[in-house]
Length: 281
Image 1 (cartoon, rainbow, N blue to C red):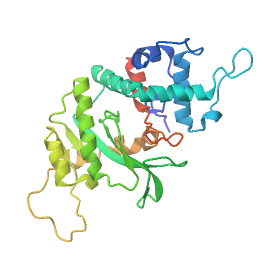
Image 2: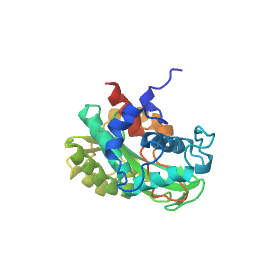
Image 3: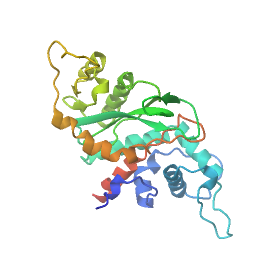
């Protein structure tokens, strides 16, 4: 079986040139105190490795210095990551990657695929709920991606026992805000969703933003066809989700990480994969 392209894998390391081009301009650095003994490039790669491995911070493999001791303590990596998350650096990195993909014409926004997924919380945390459908306790997210499975909007999170349909109306403003920030025009685009989002409020929310919904009709246990005009639905566009979203579910599940009981931490990993495509052009 042939391997996936390098940009489809979850990154664990960025080169120094990629870090300086795509990550460093968005990081907020301290104005006082001595500079860190370890470069921000290595610290960021340690963060990527910790998010990829999913291990405890104390179990993170850290290289040794000339004296045979770890070159940095794991608590310092954790504090730096928390500071970047609190001051908005992580969100700026994500917005910058989406903007770079749009400038390099690597985003295919004629069709936007959206879906929700539930991820188990193995060590507890906040924003949790038991999903009777998935038979697990965790949290739920709703994400949007283009036809090449590039995440183009921040996640909307909720406990695992919440229905996905009302979450769409909270996720659409983030999608339009991101499009406005990068200078993209979503008017005329098709939003492809599954039947769980089939309701009047969701369709109206999509229409009011100049986009057209492509949602299969949800029978909801009806034994007779629903009366009235049939909604527009294109099965060929809907089947694209099986080649974009569902083929990348193992990667999508690692887009967000629950760490140390803080469910508010959301780190976007996949745009770093796409950045390697930008740098190779």
